[in-house]
Image 1 (spheres, rainbow, N blue to C red):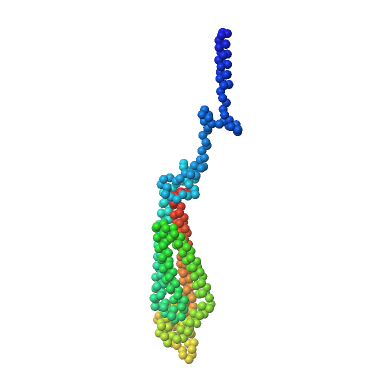
Image 2 (spheres, rainbow, N blue to C red):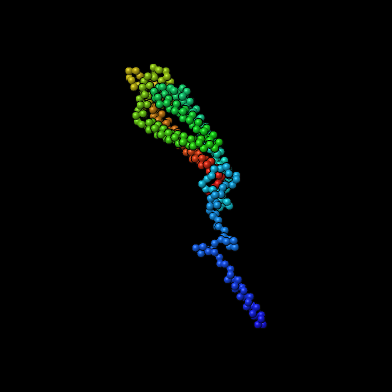
Length: 318
């Protein structure tokens, strides 16, 4: 038993000496252990933020220009690819814009045709010549020019929407803004001019002057008869205008008489013209407001299409 205890004591002493002979690990000045063959260094921590910032888009978008915000891989929840829905919405928007621009082109064609018709219409030409109002002739020319311009910009907008040409859509938007401003200014100018008392008195004076020389000129007689027959009126202020000159009284023309009657119309043609214009003012104003709203809507849709074309470069929804 004594021999067995001695052997166990010797083994414990040998193990203790072997532990003391082992070299301690190398440490640097900060107390951290340095790398050796027996003690390899710890792997560095991965910087996932830097990796996500350097990750490129998938191969199908490799030709697209690099954006400020790139797609992470694996994708984070806030970056979601929806190429099918984006393409479908853009196609729908383009189709709507094509239809609207075709309507604008059609509107320009109608305005141009109206201006040409007023330019060549015999009755309108006689009214212009008899009243000596040069603004009527100028207005028809402006109407034709505006119609042609609207047709051109409608074509440019339609072609830009079909071909997804951003510069054409931007040009269309700028021209549309200018046209809207000019239209509002023109409406305000016409309204103030027509509503002015000086304009009304000038028209009345010229009408009475034309009435006094109705027998001297066949064109004036044709104009007066046409006006009295269409508006069912007589004279400027009434039938008394034909007897203003006692030395040379004029007979009341047949255009002042109703059908199957010898009693002339009591209403003057000036008041009849004013009533006619007022009755059509609501229609004219409604059409003008509708055109302006249509142009504003087209402008908004065009801006949306421009933004959609730019964003479709990556088909990414942020």
